[in-house]
Structures are given as structure tokens and as C-alpha cells.
Length: 266
Image (cartoon, rainbow, N blue to C red; front, side, top):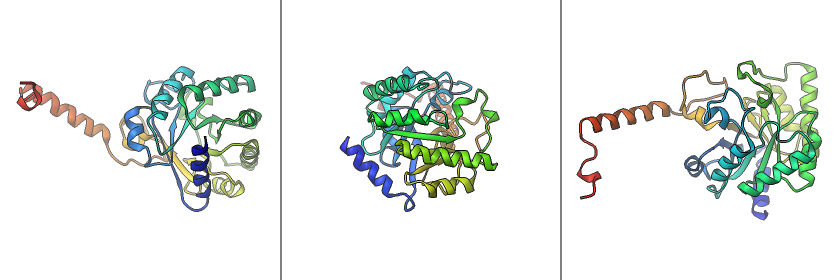
């Protein structure tokens, strides 16, 4: 726990000075690759769409997040690990605390993230008061959407601006350690980041947040069968690299070039 506190303090000290980096991971192999290269590793409920082909994240179960969370958390040594609490697992203070303790005990993660609005900030406070390191998540809450195509940016009206600013301030008061801002308009994201003392982590919310997070599969372009959000930058075409490797393997097998003596037990 002291190690978590010291690492968190380092990130807290980065606010307004050096951007914080965060990527998702759902498997041991990816966790090991990105450990230490980013400050935070998020086991997001995006695993539902990324790994299981779900249309949204509402069907992600507690057991799914626990298993992937354990695989990732147990294989990172330098970065800090955040795990999403799935849809319908924190509907009340009692249920939230019970499930939060279960996830932490099973995975040994450092933080739990809850999608938040003005209705459940008291749940954040309850978890924090009970020793849980909590990350808030405001703006777009994907768990509320059955169809991700209907997701739009927020912070377009004065009413939205006031509500989101209030949520951010109240989340800090409730004990949140970070706040994720998803698809929040640039000007509002900048104002929220300046108004609070804890780091903001943006996803589609501009460079004015204290840090950034994206789904690793998106920046690697593992799946090109759907339109990527506007805020995604492609850093490589892993789908093509894998496809080429498979083509080469299949050709070698058919041409009886694999396995050669080098790859056989003699």
C-alpha cells in the first residue's frame, strides 16, 4: 500500500507539469509489454467489445473483469493498475463496497474506476471512506449506451458545463484519486482540469487534461472492421502485420518449408 501511495504521489506531482500516460490491457502479454512504459494500465470494461465481440459493455460480468484484472495486475511491476467496475455492480453503497473488495482481493489492483454522474457521487465517497482508491469517470458514460454510435461529445451547453464542473469538484471532495473525462469539449476539459487538484485523464477530451488514455487495440489497429472514434491516432497496422505473418506461415507449411530441421527434434 505504501508503494501505491508513493507512486500515486509522483503522478499527483505531475499535474500541470508533465502529462500522465495510460493504456488499456486485458492480457498478460500486453501487460508485460506496456508495464513501465505508461504510468497507468487500465483493465477496462471495453474488453467486452474488444475481446468478446459485444455491441456494448453492459454484458461484461464481475467474473470477466476479475479474471482479466488478475492476469494484468499480477504481471505489472512498475505501472499502477486501474480496473473498471462493470455495469450494475455498484448500484448501491453496499453492493459497490462488496464488489469492490472482491475485485481488489482477487486481483490486487491499485485503483477501481466507476462511471459517475451526480447520482452516484455518494458511492464514490463511501468506497473512499472505506479505504478503496477510486477513479471517477465523467462526461460520456459508455455503460449507459446500448449503441455506441449514439455517443456524442458533451459540454456543449451551459447546463452541461455547470453539471460536469460540479461533478468534478464533488468527486475530488468525495476522495477520488483521478477523474477520467470522456468526450468532453476542449474548453470545458481545460477548465475542469484547472479547477481541481487531482489529475484528469482524458479520452477524446483534448491535450488540456493532465493525462491521456485510449484502448490499445485502437492505436495498434488490430481490428479495422469498424470506424474508429475521432480521438484515435493509429500508431501501426498490427492487423496487416499479423495477416502477413499468417500468410507466410501457411505458405511455408504448404511448401513443406516449415518445419525445417532447425525447428525439429532430431
